[in-house]
Image (spheres, rainbow, N blue to C red):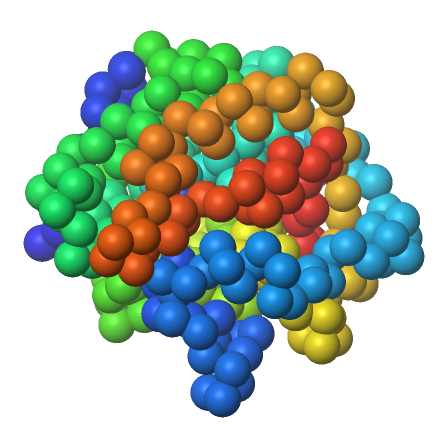
Length: 285
């Protein structure tokens, strides 16, 4: 039985550290140790999302069309920080429209700094969920009433636990919900597994499933054919909403600074923060 708690107030609920490698994006020959992630993203590979043609051709989706009036939005985040990466802007828009919201945090992100003395698993197990509390507070969400459930699954194990994970997610969904989670081909093992399980759970209960790319933003250009551009829609964010999302991303202090002496690069390098701070969010419908 997995330990979990539900938070209806500002309790201690939880950006997913990259795990293993980009399975969907790279061949074995191209595999890059994830401690070198920021170096890889900072210049070795251009990003497919820099293509103005693709971005210009993505249709705009209205928030009310994405989540119909009265419907509940459920965000399923694999790691602390993924909730902002998935829907940091959308959460603000939905909150302003008084949509009921529920957040499911699947892991506590404790395995993001292997071998670190500064960020041990014991410290991260407590600290990373607290970072998520601060991030959502910066988004202006109603912490006193936000329904927040923590699953307690371990990092880097979700692909091996898909059946119980699907059952866990389905337990908190209902017909008519609109469920947002990571894209099933995002290129991170945990992200992919949570996307698959969220899709299955949504189908089981009659909810709508919408997936969001996070690590796919940093695939190399040669992989652009794997992006389902025909399913992509753009949620526009105004200046204030974008600024709050940027501010929220900086709440993840454990992910901002690396430990070069043991080969750990920042897990949220400048290139990722800049990409997450664009005035739109992309969803696959």
